[in-house]
Image (cartoon, rainbow, N blue to C red; front, top):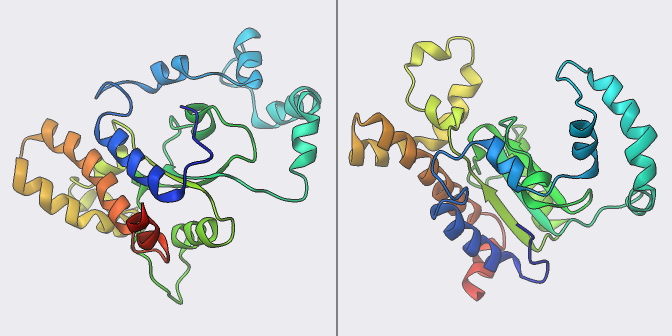
Amino acid sequence: RHLNRQSDLTHNIHSLIILLMNHIWHNDRLTMERVVVKSKPNSYTQHRHKNNYSQDITPDICAIKFMEENFAEHAELFGSLANHQKPHTLFIGCSDSRVVPSLITSTLPGELFVVRNIANIVPPYRKSEEFLATTSAIEYALQTLNVQNVIICGHSNCGGCAALWMDEAKFSKTPNVKRWLDLLGPVKRRVQKLFGDNIAKREWLTERLSLVNSFENLLSYPDVKAKFKDE
């Protein structure tokens, strides 16, 4: 959907979480293929479909075609972005390859500041000597870029949310993933209490409560809670 660029940060946080909790995909099991069909494709996507490009075309060939065709087509836009950016929206989403922020929101380069990770998690704000990629990116968007809107985008069939319920042995080669998912500990405990071993309901609710968890953690970032209260 098109974003309201005039709305302030807190209004959009509030509106978005309501939309997400009321099935932002319009159907619990809606596939990304159907989302792509409903979304307005950009000229590059249209070009690829029109020419029936196969999936085995290498990224370097695609990059050359982009420079030869699409870059030239949007030369004025890219020229205006050459030395600065002023995105109106922070988009926090899952790293899942089926989630394409600009396609979902029908936005152009320069409009979204995108932060992606496994299971679209917003960690609680904290200062640390560690390397905090997600936290620092959100902090930068809020404090330096002064984005007007924040989107926390979840999706169905989320591998990260499903992994929250996997046996620990399956994380033998991905210990950092396991540690990352510990951030959803409160979600897991709440879902377990409500649905126990009902796998279908458990998956459905985990995907939704993970968004609520991220929203609540977003309020721990400097100035966000105050702006939300003002609204």
